[in-house]
Image (cartoon, rainbow, N blue to C red):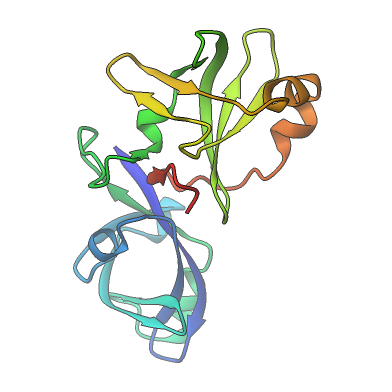
Length: 195
């Protein structure tokens, strides 16, 4: 299974180094020197990480075969993709990979059917579960333990305890709520603590 673990940003300096927007909770293993990553677009890869360091709070990587600023700039906006065993679980029991959450049935704590998870949207402040409603439309559920107290992978369901108005308000305007905050999904572990 392939997971997006980063996106290449600007070139840094003149020796082929690039900044990387990290999209994984495990950068120390997924973006370590020696890691071989597939890319999107595929024509730019695969890329092997030669060196990595943190500079001013940003991850800087250099790839084998990229030794100047021109080569580094050519990689800008490339997605970095790691191959992961589909049976692999995040170390933290409160984290889940996106592929584990997709297609889970969503029910309330009192057993009402809400819908099915179709996507995970990763925002800077928290993750959102995009849930397709049986009657049509979508609802966005903040993926925090207060609202999603239980993920049962064996039963293939997520149990939610929505605050008053969450389901009703969003269900009335699914088009507006369904499009807000959509961005590229990282596909890696999603914590339920909002951070």
